[in-house]
Length: 251
Ligand code: BTN
Image (cartoon, rainbow, N blue to C red; front, side, top):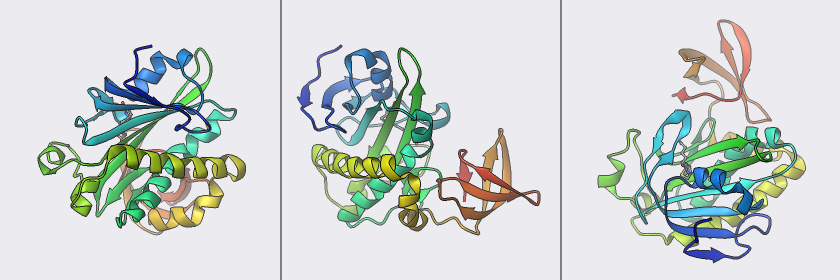
């Protein structure tokens, strides 16, 4: 494995390490390539991620030093159950952390973090089955980016710096995030997603709204009946109710 610039011992999740690299193409892909040399709970952080991957095969644009890009390796039983909610747990942890910086964030279902409709962070969870089954949770946060970079992103975006008017040290923010995520991850493993439901409802205010959703490559207008305890949404489509767990929504 390429030599990291620094290893923060036991600063990952569940005693894993935090590996800091100067340049990587994609932190998710790095874990995929080097899963044999890494363990459960390890976190790979790239100061400069050159080919970040976003959801739906999109590109995730980031900027050296100003963007925060990292991935967590999770190797546990029940990976499929974890996959359903892990990005949502991370989104809740991030919204709670942003409150410490006096930022009121919202979650656009299923897991984009927004501030006044501008995207500040995204999550990409991928499951791999070879050589063993594991999950990679990739997280991209616009931290200290400024307007000239943000306006080059397709989606209307913001950053922590743009919201509070000052720079936040990346390591400080990352360590705080990992501490919060660790607590929520333990709670989730022990009790499931339902323990986050109140927080979830507050951040992801969708109930009774009419939204557009892409289902099987088709954009449909649906009414949200309610948010479900397991992180899904129940919607009304063509007078029938349907439970949905993934997809892109347009408010
Ligand atoms: C999205 O499209 O909203 C998901 C973005 C996920 C980006 C992160 S940055 C760190 C990790 N490595 C990647 O290549 N992608 C994820």
